[in-house]
Image 1 (cartoon, rainbow, N blue to C red):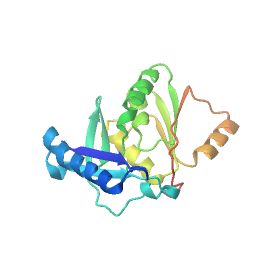
Image 2: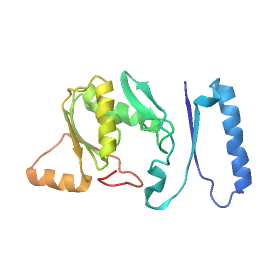
Image 3: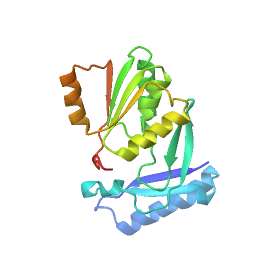
Length: 192
């Protein structure tokens, strides 16, 4: 069992020393209250940075494990990046797209990240076109599909700028039954 604690950096109106004490209290009390070993606690602060620097590997050593959500596996990295590879607050969305995938058979997943929605749709039997500009994220998503027993599922893996990809799909006359689109606050582009 692991604990991942992420906080938004306090606004400038909050005393930095007081904010630090509050976060230190959370880090000290949460593992005790939840019965989690201190070395299984990972903490990060989300700051408003320009250019997406908060999303780059901060030189931290990765700590990769897997989570099971409704019968499919997702690889998460608890320490290497600000985000772990799966957004817990998107669980409702993944359930929703999985339900829709039972009727809508062709999904386009734009800004698809590590493939949570792609895996959910494919697990329900839909075909998916997974598009993200970051090569590393598409590779991570492919691994999540493989871990979930979907290595041979009808998923197109595309590393591309989502806007340009959609423009080409329109010119080709390609259509989908449903589109999932969750653009990031900051992106790293095709090389990431």
